[in-house]
Image 1 (cartoon, one colour):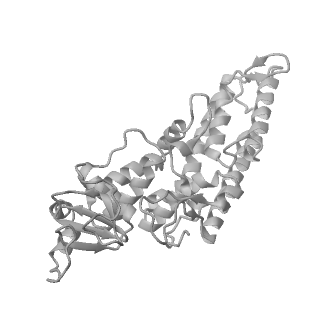
Image 2: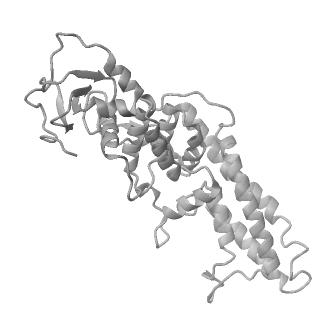
Image 3: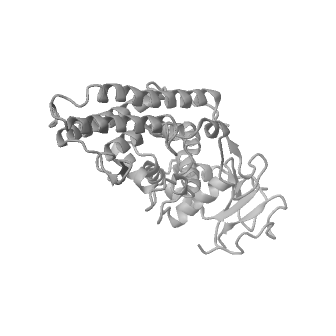
Length: 357
């Protein structure tokens, strides 16, 4: 971007109360002011993309208006950090070469103001990017979870995806109801103390009064209740699944039924039962209230060969019929979980927008 004197505070032609941003074109013909930050841009560029800006600039200005760097100025009631990212997107586009959690700073800012100023192409671009982090289909969720796991099997989603509380705050602010269920579900997988603690918001580019660095963002009481109730429902689902899916195992279709080898299928189902309960109860590390992950792990146990019988490592000695039946039960259960998530978090009907701070 061709700008003069980037990030130079208190430019010579600016009032002392204003900070000259690094979006300051020498041939610009209008200065936008947001709080204490000033941006010298081209009103034609803004009018080209937004009827709101077009109408705003058409309002006659006072004849005695003081000029800034030879240009008229317009004061906008936007956060300067948001305006900065919007202008960058309008001039340079908005691209994400490698998806990281830090993308959310620009996405949320551009989405907020592209919604306000009716800049549809930027709004659609931001919505599409959010859908990668907060998918609305089970296959895309599984892809997302795979992306958050490194080559050694460590799950570290916060390097790639923003904290779910940030997404919930944005979704309620802009009525992005589509993303609410999966954001609540993602948050419910945290331990209760972490859910209560909240998270630090991204630091603003321009530090202004009322927008401190790393502002702590917590859920409202209503949203805390929704999160914990959903978490409880998710854990209860697994207990219910175990009762229904494992109660009559092995089934009468078992290839070992009536044989001494039937003990292998019985022991395998018992082993799966115990390990799933460990995960649900929080003994296992990580996603202890995550039925989608827990069910996937249960199915993967059938193919693992790293279990120990006390002497050597081995796999579960379950017959092919029992394996097929159990895998089908898991697939059905995971689809059911996905459909139940909105209900678990009280999102079956429209919810009111509440203050997240």
